[in-house]
Structures are given as structure tokens and as C-alpha cells.
Image (cartoon, rainbow, N blue to C red; front, side, top):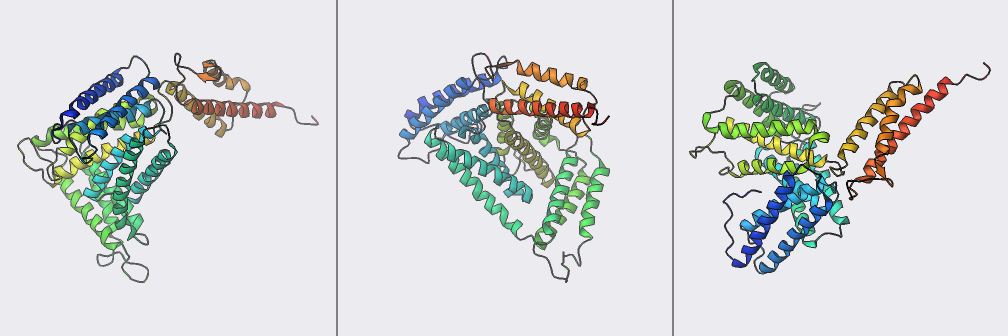
Length: 443
């Protein structure tokens, strides 16, 4: 994910030109990502994609007899694919195979963290399962992209599915009301970690969360969760472990009160800043996100994640973090990966060139629906502002298409469908006003 020194320089001199070419392509991708003077064009992205594929084909020929080779070339290649993938989302081609590459990377990171800390819910796994199914459907429909890319994606999906199956095993044992209690305790633990990383620590907030754990503990009989006939419910052991963790973690958090040792402050501050930034973006995604921006956050997270020694964080002097620091930093990394995952899966299949129009129509539709749900309008005059806005957007089309210079951006169908929905709702409101203003028969 990043140019960390844990991968060696290529030993085969034939790979040197490929490394140079990939670094050049990555620089071009980075320059395109940073250019905010114009919208990203599909033609530019496709040209860069073809250049990357050519390097992959050259690399495969060299490694025909050593397919498992891993060196710095692979690291730079991964960076190129990450950026290409995010660019495909930026231009609205979310349902094309290359767009899935970055998403599978983030899913793999999330699943690795779930495996390490064992703090995840059935809802977490269900959402990831659906996302992987969507990716497989996209791959199965593809025919315009390099077969090696499809194979690479298929292998990544298989790897993620294998991790998912392992993670599901403990949850299968939860019976009766154990799944609900499990979900509740996971939520409490995450809320404790959130409270622990706020800019201002609140003892009251943490104490309230601990009391929620005590309410769950009150349902036990002799330290066990039992059924109607006194039998120990399947999944009791897993839920009891979580409950014990709630008490242990709340005690530690109340004791430490969000104070981070000086030696781990640089990592902590970086992770808090990334988490807070991604949280803000998630709240204003439709108006502020260019998907390629996620690349820089992913790189920073990967670098910190990969700097761990035997899964543990270390300071500049090589000292291992204690349990409190470990859990705090892991929470921040996992939360940030979670935001990146959310931003990717909720990205609209609309080019950034069309997003301003798309976002205006979404806002307009919400307003019209709200008017409709609140009883409609008293007169047709009240619909004038909405009609004027629709007319203004309609006038932007050329032969039924929204253009960006000479290019027809991706997402025409989505934008036009939304425009027609707004027209339909506006028409229904007009008809309702007309019907109410007509005198009843016999008057």
C-alpha cells in the first residue's frame, strides 16, 4: 500500500524499466488527483489504466517461472491500482471491475482487524458479505477489462470470503437472545472507545456506558445466561467474555482518562486527525468527496498499521505499547478504515462532473417529498420556485444529455431518472392543487 522498506528492490534487472514506468504512471495519477482546476475525464483515466495493464503484462512475462515473486515493483503497482480504482469511482464507473480493487483492499484490512481484536457484530459481517457479492456480480459481467485483472480481483475476493467464514464461526454458536446481547455489548465497547478518544474526556459518559453493561450482567443467573428452563444458552461463553471485557475496558478508560503517553502521542494525534476528517467527510460526502482523496488517508493508515511489530504498536525507541494504548490506537485505525469502506460503498455511480447537478436534484426531490408528505401546497404559486429550478436544470441538457465540454460524463441515466422523479412529484402536487380548487358538482 505504501513505499515502506519491507519489500526489496527487484533483483532481476529486466524489472527495472517496469518499476520506473510504474513510478512515472503513479506520479501522473497523483498529479491528476491533485488537479482541482477541472473535472477528471474518463478518457484520461482509461489511458492511464491501459498503461498500467501494459506494465502488468510485461511483468507477467518476466515472472513466468517465478509467479510468487514480491518486491518493490509490486508495491508501486498496488499503489497504481489503488489510484486507478478510486479514479473509476470518481468518474462514475463504480460498476466496472477496476473500481473494486481499492474496496477489496479496505475490506481485507477491516477483516484482519476483526480477526485480531475479535470485536465485530453479525451486522458488520452481513454488510461486507453483501458488498463482496456485488463485486462478484460486477466481475461476472465484465468482458472489456484485462483477464489478469479479473483473476486478481477474484483471488482477493476469495481471500476475503475465507476470512469472513472464519469470523462467522463464533457467531453461529449464539442462540436465543444471545445475538441481541452480543450486538449490545459490541456497541457498548465501541462507544467506550469513542468516549476515550474525544477531545474532552467525560467520566459521566463512560460511567453511563458501564452501567449499561451492568444491566446486561443483571440478566445472568450464577454468572451465566440461562433459558426458560434453567439451561445455559448456547453462546453464553462468548457473551460472558464480551461482558467481562466491557468491565475491564471501562475500568481502564476511567483510570487513564484519555491521557496518552508522550512517546505514542505522534501516532495517536495522526490517527485522531484522520478519524475526525473522515467523519466530517462522511457527513458531507455528496458535496465534498472526490474518491481519490481517500488514497492519501488509506496510505497513512496502512503505513501506521504495517509499522506494528508482531501486531503490537511500538514507539520511536522500540518500546511496546501497553494494553490501553494498543486498544486505543487499534480502535482509531479500525474506525478510520470503516469510514473509508462506508465512503466507497456509498459512492454514487455518477461522474464528479455531474455531481453538482445530481446533488441539486437530490435536494430538490427531498424538498418536494417533504412538501407532499406534509399535505401538499395551498396554491400553484407555491410550486413556482421548484418549477423554476427544474427548468433551470433542464436547460443544461444538450440533446437530452448533460455535457462537460465535449465529453458525455458517466451517470446520465441516474441524473435523468432523478430529474424525471422530481417532475413527477411536482406534477402530482399541481394536480392535487387543481383538484382542490375545482368547485364540487352541484354547487
